[in-house]
Length: 399
Image (cartoon, rainbow, N blue to C red; front, side, top):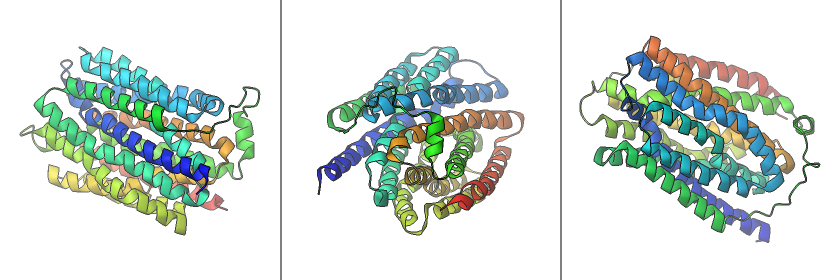
């Protein structure tokens, strides 16, 4: 085993642990953000849904603006530095959310969180640039599984802590967990990075010209936008939907935590296996299967009548997610050079942020004017459009 292989394996092991911890941190408080907002003022049904939508979206709006700049800086300074920058910045921003007294302060801190975002995407980019092409699917699947495993434990831990203590404590704990990720990355991640001078950094136009199939890359970025829009239109209202199905009776916080964690369970179990299968039969086939199943599961969710049915379908949607997020990143890695992977991954991160901007706004608008059931039907239609566009822009351009 040569030195490069040893470094790759060490980084994969350390960053898998780091994104696992980060996944716990991100997810333990986020599912309860709508309920936290509800405690910060007196809102009507429409006002609550709109505040939830805007508070969720603002993080990703800021991130979408700054992500390309961070991507260029990563090409000049290295991905490890971006990992450290993001983890410490978000540790401070999210930890501070536990001390807000009104929704405006929370809104501002969510903007600050967006400015420092990018920990997981930079960790993925570092692994993608170091992994052998024939192991890219497995490596990215491992990273996805680690992050979603954290997402699995996070809501359960957050629900338990919120029930035992307060929402404020969960935000503080999130900050501590992200600081631990910073320490692990600082001490153990190694990057043999050769700095690129500003004069040598290629422009976006040069990146595009260097691609074998620009239409395929941009088709994948469009897929990311719509996937993320569909998922993020649902995620902010899950806790409110659970409370509605339970008629605000019982421990809705803990049940919402369990249901929020269920997609992560399925993704954790399936992502590495789908990654390996994609390496054998074609990653695009895995993505197509994920899109078709997502349409079915989202549409069916519109007709649930209790929290158990919702939980089952949210678990199944996790299998669809395992076919989509990491597999799109795998296709991007396989169809880009080492010199351009960082930039393209930053574009993909921006695409995710764009989806995260529109998703909560779509979700809060539909839920505010209609009801949660209609939202799932609209989401299924979005995924159907995604399936059509993926076939046109990606499948037809595969070499």
